[in-house]
Amino acid sequence: MLLPAYHYARADIYILISQHADGQLIAEVCENLGFRTVRGSTTRGGADAIRHMMRLSAHLAITPDGPRGPRRKTQQGLTYLAARTGLPIVPVGIAFRRPWRMSSWDRFALPKPWSLGVCVTDDPIEVPADADRELLVAYTDRVESELQRLTGIAEHWAESGQLESDRPAHERVLIGVNGRK
Image 1 (tube, rainbow, N blue to C red):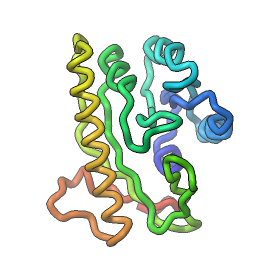
Image 2: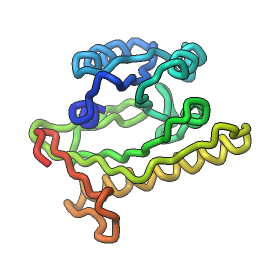
Image 3: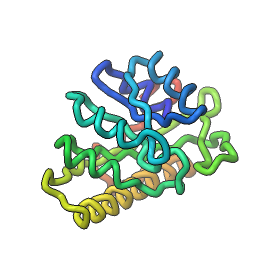
Image 4: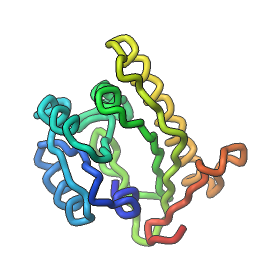
């Protein structure tokens, strides 16, 4: 979370962060980096958070697998919010070279000092405003698949030092944790 936060902090970005105790620390770090936060998740305060974000005229950042997982399983609130706000979903895959891994459900990666990381993006996904429940499920599956693909590309780089050569240029954005591009 810190890699994109460090490079993309802007005052018009709101980040959805859980109301759980671990979310407080993350919220404080994000706010110190220049982000604004909305607190809520699938298990606590989610409906209020969705309503609040729908009223904002800002960019939104969401970790789509929720505060308790399952790991890398996209929750439907993301596509619901995209449909109702008209904001596109920009999928991002992130990986680090030899990070420390937490023993948490999400195997949270903590980059070692001066290690390199990569953010890999692709074209935004637009969810139709009139999407019904069935279409929202289909878009949720599409977003999840794209996140898995981009994370796979990022992890391949982290393991081999090489991005796949057949990827478009916009997918080849290497950003070092120490600020080097």
